[in-house]
Image 1: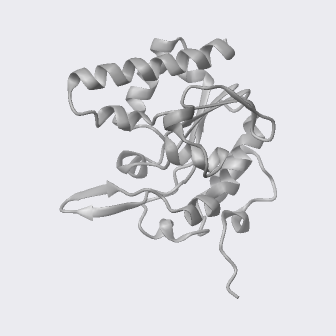
Image 2: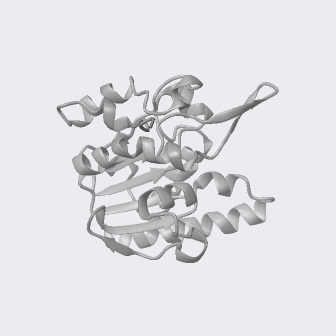
Length: 209
């Protein structure tokens, strides 16, 4: 029986964020590394009280090697400021550390990670949470929420609700991924969705003043 590969096979003995980031750069825990430019590890304040978890790096992040530096990241940081959250006081990462995509013409189009890929990459996320020790974790989008809270979690029905999850963080909340706002069908829809997103982040700010 073939054993499933996992990021656990690449964990360093020392678990500082620096050591984890350096070890993750050489991770071969699943096949996503083959098509990616590089590993995109989390970034931000080392002892942040507030941690954001997205799905996976996108095209911009894959090229830059940093999380949330593309259009969705810029929108996220703007929404943080509008909600009264200092982006410099947060830590931002993804459930999966390599960009999964399909090539269409000259573009690399995002593909949702499979469950096996989420599981393979989970040791990195667990190690980040253990090192950061955040008071609040915000899952951005359905994939991140399911990676953190289980396959039965539904952002559509549980969005914006604050839960207690002592094995993850004292407070956890899920909302949409900012990329979904950018994909809204028109300006009116984008404005409405952004307002809802900021409202979710204001709930976060209220429990993490």
